[in-house]
Image (tube, rainbow, N blue to C red; front, side):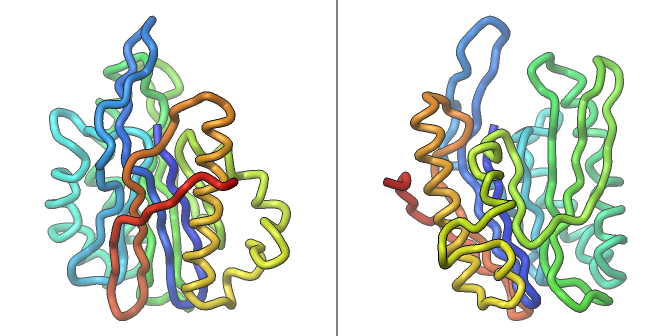
Length: 233
């Protein structure tokens, strides 16, 4: 249960996530367990970050604790050889714990991680998704794929995907992101998130929410802050 948005241009990436964790028990209504989770995890030394949607715990540990070790020990060194190697090390480091987590519960079906930022050997910024999908009680598949200039993940993505094939309004279109400055991407994602909040409220659902956080990734580093976004009118 989450919403993860991303915008990728020539020299920047912007990520925006929600902050809730929802407890799901068979036969009971889902309950909000936490509202202030951090779901974007930047490298401290390289211009890239991991973000996630789906599971908030891996085994007995929260995702944050797992990535605290994975990023500096394995992904930072892999970054030097490019995006593909960083993706491969992400899969190596998470596959066992993610697969076990998905197999352990009937309600858990999908867990996704985005690898996003600027990498050696690529001319533009990149966002790629590594996603684990539970296809049966005993089988979990993992795949990796590049994402486009505008991307959405998590169960809340259904509220914004209609804008991926048409302009959001006269100013905001996914076709413009690549050549616009970071401020354009930031404003675009905030408007998408606001629309998703309104659509969720109208539907009477709780698929995402809590404290939203946004990360701006450039060659100069990563800025990660909480942001206040109200539902669209």
